Amino acid sequence: MEERLRPINALLGLLLPADVSSPALADAGFQLAGLEVPAAGSGGSVTVDAVLVHAETSHLMVVEAKAGANVEERQARAYSGLKAADVVQSAYVTLTARSSPTIEVVYLCLSEHLDRIRLGLEQVGLSMPIIAVSGDAVRLELADIAGPQLRSAFIDGQVDLHGAVPRLIPFDQDSDPEIIRPRVLAALVAAMAQRLDQLSLPSLAERATPHYALYGRQAQQRIRRKVADAASRLAADDPMSFQVVPNNNKRDGLVRILRTPEDNDARGRTQAYQAVGRPTASRKKRRKPEIPGQLDLLSMLETSDNDGTEEPVAGQEGER
Image: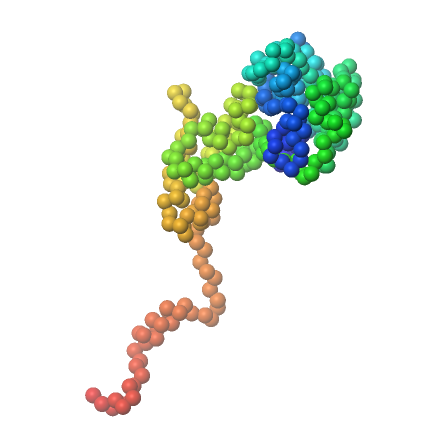
């Protein structure tokens, strides 16, 4: 996992019941409503890393995830100027309760940067709750200024982690195509198993990207470009299996699946799947190394058969 994605993955680990640690935020009533959501308020525009909604009380929590230790003043002031209605509209949040929506801004960081993040917010005259992620716990700092919904998820001020931070988001719109490539390959292999002839690039991005539908439109576009790049590299390495048709003005691009291991017999199917996505050159069979002084068995037999000598048959010596 990329180090910069640890904070957001730790947050999602508290929202999704798919990890060994307690989904404390989900148990408190929070749901994930959006990722990388552009929003604008009186302080300017900002891209919110995660939007959480507490459906029972119509309370929104907007999260700025920090992998480093710096607080950007413009960004912090833009967050502080957001109104609940702005985020509801930007993230397409559906509110089921009749109460008016409320909002709070939370900074999310690694525990080693907690003091710097706290100091940075103080220097710009802002005070916001901070969620700090360490190797064994997720802690809520400045809990006294946090909303009651958030405090209820951190009853003792922290949630213990019973394992490593889960890899719920293995990549995002800023990741290198080589990091995205294994997920794209896995999605294409799944399509092969379903005997699909082709996938549009948006469909491939959706299959390869966890929580794709929750990303803002700009982030989705960047992810699609990264997925298309990864797919093009896979097709270049394995042109017998894949062909990428790029976007044009009339339609989205697509990946054609030229063959599938499902057409092989049972013994060849597994080996064929293992070879998918590997460079063609690496699949060429290597000649077994010859041991000096050792002849091939067939060559020895041919030599013996054609050397022109025959051993006499017992009892026939001298007879014609």
